[in-house]
Image (cartoon, rainbow, N blue to C red; front, side, top):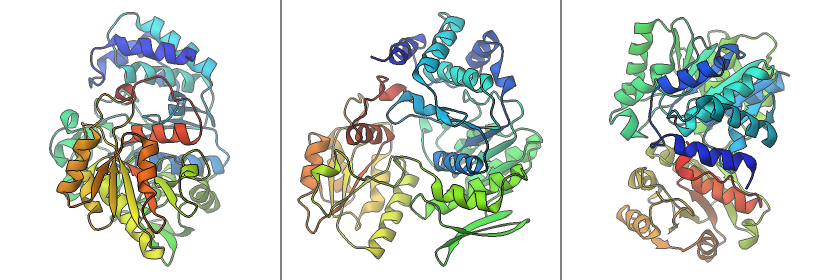
Length: 442
């Protein structure tokens, strides 16, 4: 076991709940650590339900194309915990991560603190001690009471598309969820607001007006759309005619738009249109409409089969993934087979519903090593209730074998959970996963 894994395992015992939204514990440990959050480079704070990670990836890629040193904080990780903490252009090294975690553990003592809070504190230490030009900070869950929301004056706030997810923590209506996400807005700090359902947008605008945060809203103050195979972005400063982003799916036009709007709002003269173009073309974000190349899993498939991976797991993600594969099928038709696993905290029926009439078959599996995984049998019943042909498999390898029997050679999509996606990538790329349970990975 890696040293960092041993420390992370200990940190799990510091609070009886994996998620307990509050800022008090975070403020306490940061004070004990000398308030590293007050010594960070300019912060771009990103909240939302869908598209946060992709938006973060685009902003990072554009800034790096412009030659900037960029810190980045995301969650959850897929394979290694280290993925979360990106320090001045590099994933944090094992030795440095372990030392920071131990420093935070010592500062905290036996006081209750959640896993996400104490590991976020370690990330802030890393970012404060290494010079960089910008920090892109992704919210873990919600916004108002998220551990990242201790930054008093970010450079910019971004709220991507809001939809139903984590209702047990954020509320059962889009208004309630939007209220929590809008908690990252700060007086006088401009905010980029992505494409939103009407109910969510209205609540964000209400919060912004109350606290005095200027908002710049998709399809009102700026637009991003595809036209003739190009991405067109337009705001009060003019029009950009760009290549489509590297990441696949129509929804990525919206996510790229969030990032371009953010870059334009920062108004750093060192970032050119060429840097934006290059950033969109060179971006990488695993498990988001990712076609897997040569590796352990593709070697199990017929020669002409395709293997895709996406970690989306809520109703909105199901809709955009299904639409993306419908578009792919329009260009190059072949049978779509889903290999599907989900956690019991998610709305499985709403996720799978958009695939009716699109997926020829669904092969269900329980996510390996996840105590909160829905059983393969339950998922198969849910798929059938949505008029999909479904069968179960006892492992990922067997699911791939069953999917491969489809003729002609199928397009296989493994989907339903970021935790399943991490398991897939670890096998495909022959990498050992961090020894932190999926339940703690938020």
